[in-house]
Image 1 (cartoon, helix red, strand yellow):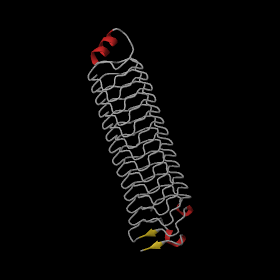
Image 2 (tube, one colour):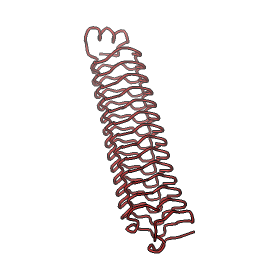
Image 3 (cartoon, helix red, strand yellow):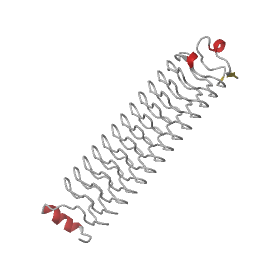
Image 4 (cartoon, helix red, strand yellow):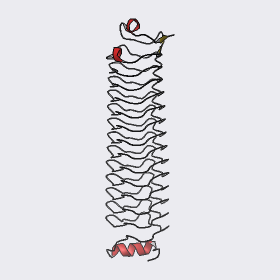
Length: 310
């Protein structure tokens, strides 16, 4: 069957027919109520679905690339393996939707809602999710390389083994997020709220964590070579066996942080607070740099060798 029009869609829906496998390329479906329908494998390339209600509908394997689905309602919809490449989905509600394996690269999702959505293995490279709500979303192995996530909420989200290389996340909420084994190489996490987040075995090489709040965060076995922790607040954080060689901890707060087995070789601690850091004597400090305003544990200067005071 060839491409069908808006009026034909309305007629088919009124008659109880499905829309799977059809071609709706470029059709204007804006503001229609199409909830609970089947669109499996449907061609919706460049379709206008702005403001449409398709909650609970099935879009598995459908093509929505370059479609306008802004301010639409996809709550609890099945979008497994859907193609949303370069789609406009600003302000759209995907709460509880299944988007596993979806192709969403270069898409516009500013202010979209993904609360408790399933985004496992989704492709979101170079997508814009600024101010999106991804709280408690399942995002294991998602690809967010070079994505823009400014001021978004990832509170309680599961991003285990996700790819966020060079991703831009300033001012985002990562409280209690699971970032275990996540690749954050050269990512921007400045001014993020990330207390109680789990970053075990994450790759933070050359990442920007300036002024991040990571109180009670789990950074065990993190690779943070040359990372920027300037002004970071890491009170009570667990950094056991982390490699933070060459990192910048200027003005950082590390009170009660657990740092046994941590590699701080060549790291900078100007005006940082290490006074109450735990198990500091079991860390590697060779070549680390301190100044007169650095707050150090008692007996640190007498017991640690190979460091630099300026």
